Each structure stands twice: as structure tokens, then as C-alpha cells.
Amino acid sequence: MNNELYPSWIELDKSAFEKNVSFLRDYIGNDVVFSSVIKGNAYGHGIKHFVPLAEDCGVRHFSVFSSDEARQATRASNHDETHIMIMGMISNEALGWAIERNVSFFIFELDRLEVAAREAKRIGKPARVHLHLETGMNRLGLENEEFKDAVKLIQKNSDYLQIDGICTHYAGAESVGNYVRIKEQIENFEGYCSWFEEHGIEAKHRHTACSASALNYPETIMDMVRIGISQYGFWPNRETYMNFVKRYPDVDKEHKDPLERVLSWKSHVMSTKKVSAGEFVGYGNTYLTSRDEIIASVPIGYSHGFGRNLTNVGIVLINGKRAPVAGLVNMNLLTVDVTDIPEVSKGDEVVIIGKQGDQEMTVSSFSNMRNNLNYEVLVQIPSILPRHIV
Ligand SMILES: Cc1ncc(COP(=O)(O)O)c(C=O)c1O
Image 1 (cartoon, rainbow, N blue to C red):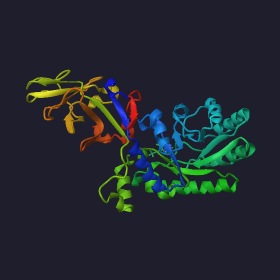
Image 2 (cartoon, rainbow, N blue to C red; image 1 turned 60 degrees about the vertical axis):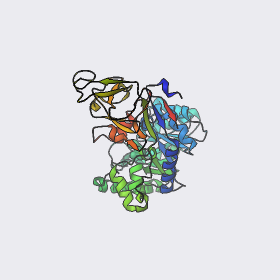
Image 3 (cartoon, helix red, strand yellow; image 1 turned 120 degrees about the vertical axis):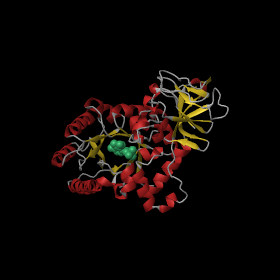
Image 4 (cartoon, helix red, strand yellow; image 1 turned 135 degrees about the vertical axis):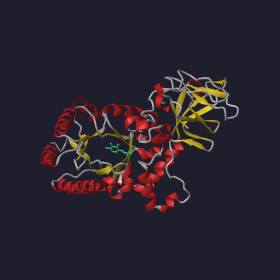
């Protein structure tokens, strides 16, 4: 890809992903199914590019939120053995498509189970389903009192309902404050699984773990995991990292994080200008030069997700040095003070997220709102930015 053609672009580091997956596989066990969670446009990495990258690294199972994401993922996939699982939204009208395409989906309402069986009969092929059980999150999931009806439906339609999984999701496994609630959910899940088994329902897989639960509660790994944020090189939060290092002190021996960021966001200097001391830069009067300064324009703005709230606050990297945003962030453009960076010129690489020299702009430093989760910042990276694999 010719980067010169684009105001900014995303780079996906394949070797970083390989390292993350290898670390996670070693941890969870090689015989456990690793489902790569790619909802939210693969956490901003881009489904179209991320799926083939992950497939090249041996991943053959992907979890999406909705049927439209499942369609994107099937289009992006290059491998016949790749399986796509929908964890959330799929309308009854789209169930036929999923069945025909071998896409599995969560069942959290009896109505969906009924329609799935009906559609499967019409198509002449079993629907691959995962029974999503309510264990205490109180969001989605079959309720205890619905289990008997679910079993009846499954037994009545045994040729048309294939139980690929029995699963649940935890209500905040990244925080010790939720410990009691998570432990209760684990207990509930185990009890419910035994109940289903006693009633003749054997699921192919049991899966409950996201990154935080796999890392904080190893008993949740079972025989399949649904891993999102950590495969992209981020710990779910600081607490999870600290907890992990406490259990495995070797991991942090050289103060080297075993997870590496996959995504970088880059641009280039569009133009530079000398501005005398005492002049305002850009719209209005938010930035007044305090000396003779050199201002560089970078073709990124709030239309690309670089928020206006980063006006006079954000930082980018140029020539391995930190360049502070000087003046209002515009729709397509921002201005940075490069006075202290020698010889900045048109075309120089600008890093918005990622490494340059020995400096790094992390996803969390990109946002000046400290309580903005990595998850939130990542998924807001616009899907229209070109992406390529390095
Ligand atoms: C049902 C479900 N499973 C797994 C995940 C992956 O979570 P994480 O990115 O924390 O690994 C998510 C994401 O929120 C989810 O909704």
C-alpha cells in the first residue's frame, strides 16, 4: 500500500499478534478452542484485514456480536475450516442464512430456539447453537425456569438442533470488587451444566471465559475461550496484569509485558510553518505562541477520531520525539509544535498510536479522559481508515 496516498492509516503487526496468541495458547492450553473475538470491527483493527491475519497465525474460530459482522467475517475468511459464532444480535429472519452458512449462534430466548429448529427443518440442515445461560449477569441468557422447555424443544428437534456449546458471560471478571458475584456465576454455571447433562443434553463445548476471566479465574477456561482484548495486546485492566504477575512472577522478570500491541495509527507531516512569538495558531485563540515556533500540520482531525478534546492536550510522535498539539483540533487537521524537534519536514512519519524510536503513544495516552477504556478508544478508530499488515 502506498501510504503517501492517504492522510493516515492503520498498521497491524502480525508478529505481535503471533506472540500474543502463542502466550495465550501456552496459558490456556493447546487443546482448548481459542475463539478470537472480533466484534466492534475487530476492536478497531478491521475485520477485513484482521481475520486473514489471524487465520495465517492458525486461528480458526471467531466470535462476532451480530449477523452483519458474521457476514463481514465470512467474506474476509480464506479458510474453509474457519468457524464463525454469533454471540448477540441476529434476527429470526437471518437465522436461515446462518444455518446455511454453518454459522453458529447463541440462544438466549426460547423463541430463537424454536425458530432455529423450524428454519433448520426447512433448509434440511441442523442449526448449530450455543445455549447461553443466565448465571447472574442479568442481561442475556436463558433463565432457570426456561431450561425444561429448552430441553423439550431440543429433544423434539434433535435432528435439527446441534448443541455446539453451553455458555455464559461474567459480569466484570477484571475487577476484584466483583469477586463474589463471579464466583457465584461460576458455581451456577457448573450446576446448570450438570442439570443439562442429567437431562440428556451434551454440549460439544463449555465456554464462559473472556480475557479477564481466563486470566483471573483459570477455572473458567474449560474447553473453549472467547478472547478479545488480550489477543490485540492489551490487558483488560491494570488490576488483571498485577494479579497475573503475582501468580506468575517470571512473566514480569525483565519488566517485559508478554502482550504486544498489534495496532499502530500513523500519518505524515503535511506542511510546516514558522510562526513568530505572540501569534495565535489556528482557529480562534486557544493557542498563543510563547516564542518563535515551528508548527507542523498533520492531516488528522476529529472526523478521524482524534477528538477535539485533545486540543492543546494531545501528543503525537515525530522523528522519535513527542510533539504536543498546538491549537484546536479541526475536522481533518491538527497542528503540533515541533520547535524542539530538529529538522522536521514534509512527509515525515507521524505516530498517533504506536512506537517510534524508543517512544510509544499508547491507546490510553491517546485519550485524555483517563477513565476511557482501551476498548472504547479502539472501537472508535474509524473503519474507513486504510489498514495494512506489517
Ligand atoms: C460474550 C462475550 N464473550 C467474550 C468477550 C471478549 O471479552 P474480552 O475482550 O474482554 O476478552 C466479550 C466482549 O465483551 C463478550 O461480550
